[in-house]
Each structure stands twice: as structure tokens, then as C-alpha cells.
Image (cartoon, rainbow, N blue to C red; front, side):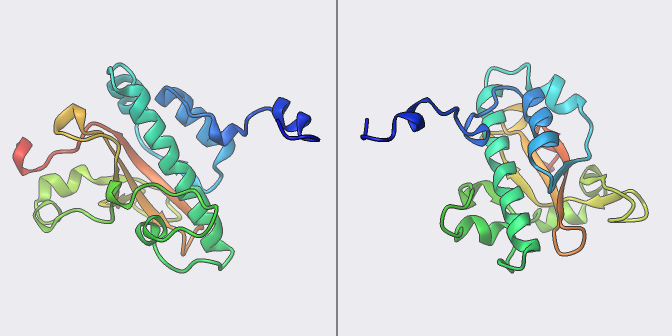
Length: 183
């Protein structure tokens, strides 16, 4: 220990650095700690479908780190200090910024997914009426929480509305949504 730093050794860890181990904890902390990231989706997917899986803790930690990065990105963008999108943020984060691997971020879905009515409909997710009067918006952008296919490849679909409302809306947190290979 460095001389004069004894108080630092006994200081509690920053809440942001303590990673959650369940999606229930992710959602609870999100409401309290991340004012620019709003969950608008169905709670059944993260709480029932994901929290019961063996990889849930790892996925929850990845989701939390992504949400920290989204909140940091949104705050910096609203302040006018960053003009790019979330993928750019993750590729070239400012010093001391929260970011995740850009390889985990998909800024949109593929053309086959966007052009297939059934798959597109699965990605029309809840959003406030201030974002879209219909109460739903297409959320093709997503974060890969796990690899593989199906249940082992959970996703977090979001809508970046930083330029308008100053927020990011997460409309889905659950198993991989349908694609051609799963139909």
C-alpha cells in the first residue's frame, strides 16, 4: 500500500464496477443507475428465459457492460462531446469511457431479416409514444450477449434515440430472435 493511501484501500468499490450476476439485478440497477438507458421490453425474456440458464451470469455481465457503455455514450452525445453512433463509440471510445468490444455490436439487421415480414415484425418492439406514435419501433440494432445459435445466443435489441430524446431504448433482452436458419 502506498503511504497516505490507506483510506483508498478501505473505500467501497464503485457500484458500476461491481458486475451483476442476474438479469433481475441488471434491470433493477439499470432503473437506478443508468438514466439514459430505458428498458421497454417484456420482462419474461430476461427473467424467465435467460436467468434460468447456466450462462446467465456471464450474459448478465455482458448486458450490464453494454448498458454502461450506452449510458456513457448517450450522456456524452447529449452534452455535444460526441457526434457518432454507438458502434463508433465502441470502436473509438474517448479516454476513460465505458465501451464494449465493437464486435459485439450490430448496428442493424441484415437485408433478408429487414425484408421478411415475419422477422421484421419480431423486431418491432415497444418504445414510448414520444419516439413513435404507434408505441413500437424497429430495433434492428443489437448487442450479442452470447455466441452460438438459439438460446445460447441471446441478444439485446435497442433503438438509439440519443439525437432526439437523449436516450437509448432496449426493447428486447432474450433468446436470439427468429432468422432464416431458425425458421
